Every structure is written in structure tokens, then in C-alpha cells.
Image (cartoon, rainbow, N blue to C red; front, side, top):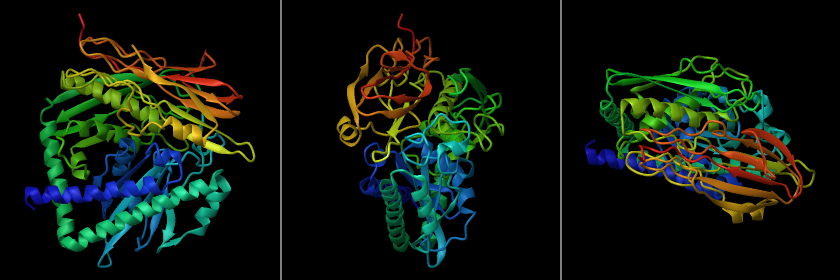
Length: 512
């Protein structure tokens, strides 16, 4: 292919991912998928290597890119099959993120796969929102090791019977699974048309050329980094069980046009739920290096070939079963981004931003009262770190999440909650030549008793500044004005008020 043909080919596969996402959003039942857009879609080759992805959720996509080869090798695929999983130790991230994979066949031969991953607020945990304060993965809900969802186009009844036994909102969750199936079906149909138009041989050759192009772009981008070893360390606030800070350490080694990101020295896995599988750590690393690539770089397996990720087995970032992992996907991945950016700030002075608010500020809520069961989950943005080029943005989701905020109207119409305040947390960004972005204040009043779980970070350790810029202001969680820990679970009564104040981003440069 010449450059124009390759660009068109890449755009066509990207468009398949985008259409899959549009179908998933419009067919879904839950607020998490249809309003917050907490889902991701991607296309893979027949070996499970990433070909394309939509601009959805970085932690979903990077972890799929890392783990898909191992997943697809487990099955004897037939046309019409679909496989479902959420097991963090077998290719998933945390239990609410459920992945559905479907194969593409051309002339009776396996040509590739489409996949989507969507967040289910009810995945069977006792705690509403399925994001509990946990010490064992089985406490976090229904663990789905890779298994058939459809076999030759026919639903596997045993799986849906298990869903009915384990979940509260059976109709809504069943509807979301059907939406994921529909999304994969449209992806398969669109890819079939593309393969038919090009021919199978030309399509497969196009994937080879696309990955080769991505690898060349990555090598060129990484060549700007001077060879050497760059260190950085940071901490997590706590694990929800102990109040101890949890160290994270990285060494980024740049040599021979390759990068090794080594997390030796990071804490062993902990009792609480901030552990994560290696695929989640890899997703965060891939995200940072993708940000160094040119805008026209295709997001494919070739782009990641020069980057290797190492983490000791049994550590916070490569946890062993049965480690609790609910917050690892959301909170620990955010800190991985911070430490990798911190290391690269030494390798590329003036090119990396200060720390952003560093948390997805997770709020899970609901009730198990008979006749009025409900589950809801959302993440809240904060301040973006400033850079040498500009101030940080205010009140925005950053780095490993790319979801929307839930509109107040949608939240209040669906659940017994009133939003009293939703505003920018003025002055929370770090001072500097360029100021860090300000965080958010979001205040919830409960109109019925409910169980609420908060999983947050940057409450004890503020987001750092760069180049003598000041740290952003740390976040706060409060119940009726009383300060709460970073991670907690609460039984709320009618009229109780939860206030979440998210952290501001760090400043960049001296303002003096």
C-alpha cells in the first residue's frame, strides 16, 4: 500500500470501532453505558494483536491490547461464537468491566476479532455498585472466566441463568449484554464488507503494513529520548484496609530504540483492593507512550512493540489470585501514569505535564431493599496538571478514564438522589508559571436510605508540580460535613449529604 491507501485502510478499521461504540451506547439500558460512555471497542487480528480502537477508555483498551492474544488462543473458534469474560487474572481488569469477543471468518478461515468492554454497575457484589471495600476478588462480584456467551449464534442458557441468580437488576443487565452482542455483530458485518471489498489476502497484508508503520513511528518518537535510566517514585494514599501509604517505583530504561518500564521496588500486593493485574499496569504505560506519538499514529500492536513492561509477580502491579482488584483498575492505574510521566519528565525536560488530580474519584451507591433495588456508579473529574505550554484544564477527566459526567437530570430522574452542588473547586490547582487545573465539588443528597462506597486517591498526598510549580490541593470526602477517609463504605439515611471535593492539578514552573 502507498501512504494514502494505508491511511484510508486505517481509517476504515477505526470507523468500525466507532460504529460499534455507537450501537453499544444506543442499545444499552444502563446509565453507565448510555450516559457516561463507560465502554470501549476494538478490532484485533486472528492472533489477537490489536489492529484499531476507538477513542474510548484507555484503561480498557490498553489492557485488551496486552491480554487478547492469550485469551483468543484458548478457544476453537467457529462462526457465530462469542466469548465473555471479566476475570482480572485471565485477561480482564476488574469485575464490573465485562468483555465480549467475536470472531470474523472469511472463506471459512479465521480472519480476526472484534471486542467490546463495558462497565456493569451490578456484577453481583453484595455492595451496591459492585465496587466494594474488599480483600478478596470473590467479594467483588461474579467472576467470569473466559467462556462462551454464544455458541454458533445461539445463546448459552447456563450463563444467563447464572446472571439471573447473581444479579439484582436482571432486566437491565441482560439488556446491556444484548447491547454488547449487538455491538459485536455490527463490527463483524462491517469488517466482512471491508474484507470482501479488499480481498482477504489484501486485508491481512494491510494489517502487516499498518503494524510495521506503527512500529516505525514509535521508534522515531522514542529516538527523541536520550538513552539512560530514569527513576521516579510516588505513593498511593492507602488500600482501604490499612491507613499506610503504598509506595510505587519505576525505572524507565531507554536503549537501542527500545524502552523497558520496570516497576521493581513497588510494594508487594496488599490486603485491600488497589492491586491490579499486569495488563492494567501495561495499559497505563501504553497510554503515556501513545501520548508521545504523532497525531496520525495508528493505535495498533506495532505502536507498542518497542515498549516492554516489567513488574514483579505478586506485587501491587502484578497481583496474584485471589487479590482484591476493584480499585486497581481505576486508582492504581492513575498512579502508574503519574510515576511514568514523572520519570519521563527527567528524560524530556519541559515536555511532560505536572501530575493531574490522580483519581477517578469513584462513587458507588444503591440499595438492596426488597422491591426497590438499585445500583449506580460514577467517576468524577478533577484538575489537569499544567505544562510548559499552558495552564491545566479545570474539572475534567484525565488520563486513564475518558467517560462523561452523568448529567444531573439523568441521575435525578433515575435514582433517589438530588445533586445540591456541582461546581468548579476554585483555587485548588497548584500555583506556578502555568497554574494547575481546578478540581470539582459534587454534592449528593440522598432521598432514600442507601449504601455508598467511595474509592478515591490524592486525599493524603497532593498531585505534584513540576519545574518548581506548586502541588495541587488534595481532595476531600465528607458526610454531612464530617471528613471521611479516601476509601470507605457507609450506610446512609434519608437526607444525608455526601460531598466530594476532587484534587487540583499540579502547577508548572515558578511564578516568581
